[in-house]
Image (cartoon, rainbow, N blue to C red; front, top):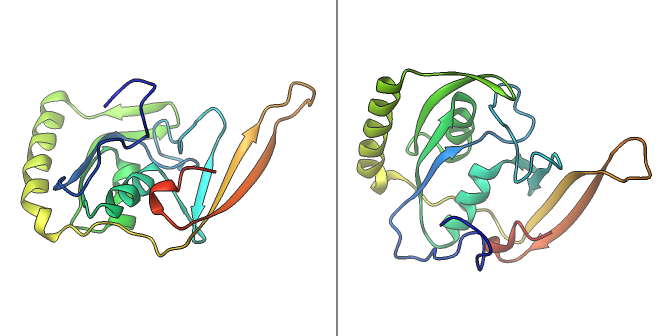
Length: 176
């Protein structure tokens, strides 16, 4: 699904799905070698913690899918997001790196033919791995914290603000 407005970020997810694919994912905000690293917004420099653990969009998406019993089976992006995927989702979830980040806005892209083959092979492996992939879940209630940069036209420097919330339903972890 693309475009706005849409009913919710993950409209259409239900237990009929057999797997979630995150194609072109980015590493969480603050990842030095993550190309275009951000979590929900690069403009406001958002960072999220759930139950005391900082996470990025890969985990946010996996958590919402996991609520419905949907395992994340494949994540593609740069080397940094692939590390993040393995760290949080484990080895059963296939990750395919298509570039190596050297700065927030700079990357070394892998050759096209090599990337095409890696994506094809990754998708094939992901389909085979579905039985081993476990839906990602968080213990509820989820204690959430979001930190973001606020630009105030009257202030000479932006400031970080923090919001906290408790979520009984993991589908709402983005609603601060």
